[in-house]
Image 1 (spheres, rainbow, N blue to C red):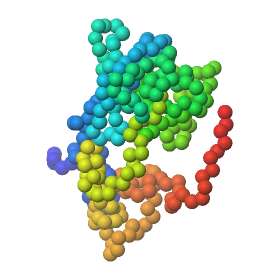
Image 2 (cartoon, helix red, strand yellow):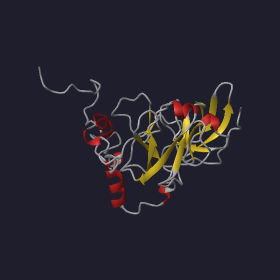
Image 3 (spheres, rainbow, N blue to C red):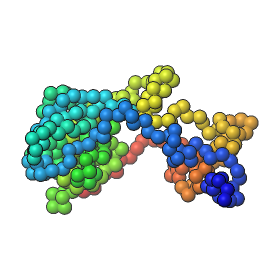
Length: 271
């Protein structure tokens, strides 16, 4: 029995190196740098007090989280069942400050920073850290400056339509919770990086994804775009959704390419 690793490529494929996008799946140096992170930012575990009433917490501090553009808020609640405190890590909404009272639950008031089921909020409310399924503790609109908008309710079916930061509209159960307001730290991308050192430290906190060598700058052994006497791709940059790994680089399963030209036409709302 030889100790050689079995070749993952197609038997009649030309020999080449395992390219960068394939190596990323292995982990090793491509793991996330999560040592200095402060903890997972989630809503409270859905309990009776949130389902039917409300519970009051206090923001003990607003903190920076490594590798995240948005600040986090440490919120202290009293445990409803035992004599002890419960500390939760929330994504801070714009305008949340330390010492602020935060109310979570169905009967909470409509104030920035509070957590309510989306079914109890009026249409047009700006919300963030939205649950996708009731009780999943927050999944959508969590990046800095992001927010969703409540579009419409259907109380009979118990569903609510929400416009997400991408512009898509999504139907969610009305029992899903969300924070009122938008995520703090907005406009972060407006400031230019200006120098490579800033990018270096930005990605040092996130993961090994910078600097990125372009495929055309490589040799043919390292990338499908590599080689040639001028830096050129030499074939279409679009590539099939079903291309094998190692060939799957460039514009993957592109519906269209090129600049977006003309004005975007928004479809009329159908409800």
